[in-house]
Length: 286
Image (tube, rainbow, N blue to C red; front, top):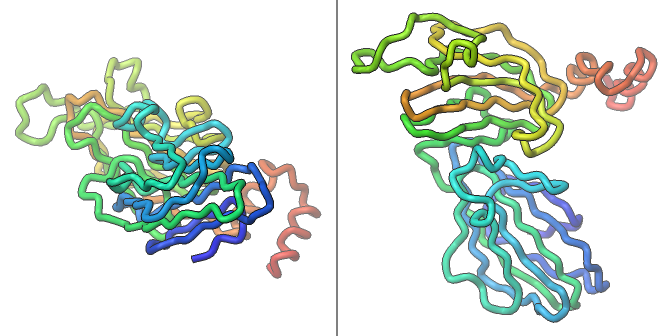
């Protein structure tokens, strides 16, 4: 597969061949890889010819990085930040494949010298216990679950979505458990009640949801019914925060908004008046 642009996004697997443009550019390019929400990604560098003395570099990032921000954010990932990136140059490919913890990986490369090139094999592998999930545009119902572990799990979309919280159990033991049973209720005052486990929903302005997420709702307790659907015009994030005391499970229905619906619902957010909205829709034959 050939990538004509410096920044590309693909959900394809297989073998990719990337070579220098030969113009001496020192620009760092990126190939943003993603897969189904229930997959992880394995990347094997089969061939590397990237001379170090010319400033050439190749890097693999466990997650996506953009404008200095990283997703999943440091508090939501199982590895320290310094262990999530592998950087190299020269002619010796790493002996082992690079395997992500979620369905997103970034391949960065800088190839200033003519003749510099690399060959990359990408495989999508099943993930039996997905935690952090990047919306892939095909899946509509996502499962956030900590499996009794102390960890955060995040569902993230870079595009506007319609979202609905389905049945959930957060901060409550399973039936028959030995821990104290809480009342079967849903609360939006989790912190005030002293409950450490909760699920939050909101809008983000960047990939680092630790710094940029504006939380609109925080829920805990038990619910057996679906909540009302709502639209999010910016980047969407839903984070399940777990203390490890409970086996938390949340189902979230989220779908990407079609372009026409996105413009209609989010015109004010994009600074469009009625005339500009109508012109934008005409441009897309709507």
